[in-house]
Amino acid sequence: MDLTLKAMEVERMRQTVTENNDRIEKLETLKTVLGGYQKAAVAFSGGVDSTFLLGVAREVLGERVIAVTAIASFISSREVGEARDFAASLGVRHEIIEVDLGDISLFEENPPDRCYHCKKALFSRILAVAEGLECEVVMDASNTDDTKDYRPGMKALYELEIKSPLREAGFAKSDVRAVSKELGFPGYDRPAAACLASRIPFGEDITEAKLQRVELAEAVLASEGFRVNRVRVHGDLARIEVAPEKLDDLADYAMRARISERLRDLGFRYITVDIEGYRMGSLNESLDI
Image (cartoon, rainbow, N blue to C red; front, top):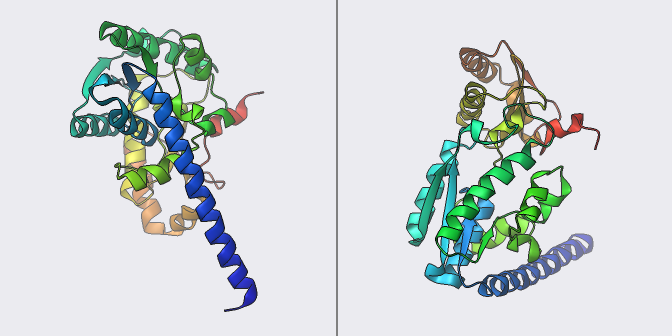
């Protein structure tokens, strides 16, 4: 083997060992944090992070952990179904709360701090459920990557004293995926999900119909093989984001024609592809922050 290639392989192996040891340490820290609670509630969306948190909490706390899931038009119905299935598989008590857009102050008006008002309303409801079941704390599954983007909802979590044990233990998204795979938790490679309202530019009113159209449009892209995708809505224009490495797949004329036809059937007049590809919170780029 070429000496340069051998050195690269040795370095890669060393890095892998270092990462594994680091993740083992983070997992032990997480278990220590969770073990300090008598009874806890997990705000459980069914996504990768909350699935991991609930799974570890179940191992540490046993029957002293419950899951609380919100059902709303801005939350993917697929995620809610996955949440039900995983909680049932763990034998965890699973509480469901239903939320209407009108229950959340300023949500429909869609100001730049919409996420703050949404988190404040949702977690206030979750806290009420948790207190009724004598839970000591409510936990969310935000990780260290969530501090790298514009996240006004974090302020609400702080005000309500919601615990974030994954961040406390130093877990990044990549750590969550890697350890979830090792522990056999489902969906470790599932694409990152986000509130459907994040597809609508700030200042444009949010309606049930718009949210449903977004969910259906993204299902169209998923059916064509684009697991990572977003459909950002700009009036009657759909701006498609897919993983950068998948952009070349859209060169296929027949595929583009199918996607265009199905999105037009949903009410979009214009369909365009963002040549930068998917990036987290791309609509935040319009904010002066």
